[in-house]
Image (cartoon, rainbow, N blue to C red; front, side):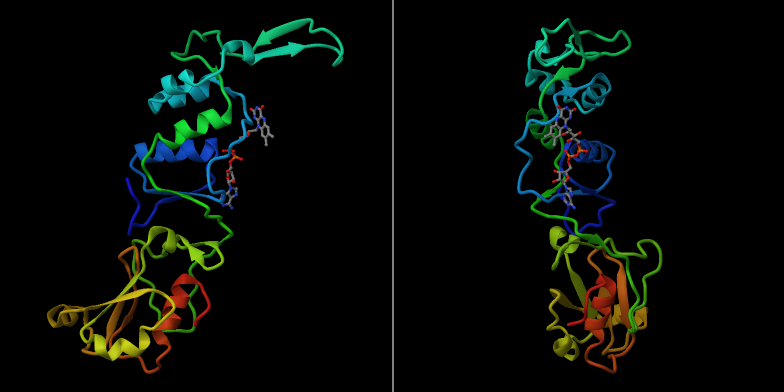
Length: 254
Ligand SMILES: Cc1cc2nc3c(=O)[nH]c(=O)nc-3n(C[C@H](O)[C@H](O)[C@H](O)COP(=O)(O)OP(=O)(O)OC[C@H]3O[C@@H](n4cnc5c(N)ncnc54)[C@H](O)[C@@H]3O)c2cc1C
């Protein structure tokens, strides 16, 4: 499922085994999700060496157990070797629990595999958008500035808006921005050269009447479809639209 022009319910930060598995499970449960990973690609390093029994059960739930097992190493690589010093010969070896030794209660066995083998399989397990090269650098809550910004009613009081990097937010990642609905776009032309991409659409008079919007008023529609601000008439100052956008996105007015 592509995430576009939609409010995501969960933002996953990090494309390691945990983030990739969470993404696949959430997609399966119908949750709208966006994963951001600061690196340009999956990690090329082997790192962890084992998918244990319980993890394999979750992977089985996702239909991945056979694919992961097919890319695994032989079970002999999953043995722990015991010795007193580095120079000693090993006096015992033991298989890791559940590796090459079925657990009676489980339909799967754990496998020896490295992270660079596992992660591509987890990534391919879902269609939901993944944004590589996006780093979450902070979280911001909506703040009401000194404007006539009117927070929308429930649901969606707060717009899901996070700064991923200076100048790049989840809105950029979603490719979605604001729409100004007004009965007369010409009156708003000088307001709309904002640094925020903004579509201006004509609001038919009969609809404007229903919303109580006068001919020179406007509605600012957020990317998630909720009303972010409402001007019954043309605002008294030219910067009002900019201030409202800055307030909604918690960024500095231009
Ligand atoms: C050198 C090394 C060897 C290891 N060897 C073993 C081993 O032999 N056996 C074993 O079981 N485990 C091993 N591990 C541990 C194993 O790699 C971790 O337990 C596992 O990767 C944890 O998975 P994770 O998804 O929680 O986190 P990670 O795999 O670390 O994934 C987190 C991801 O989040 C991304 N990220 C972080 N901050 C942000 C941000 N602000 N915005 C966007 N993205 C962000 C990171 O780039 C990373 O890709 C090893 C780890 C290392 C480093």
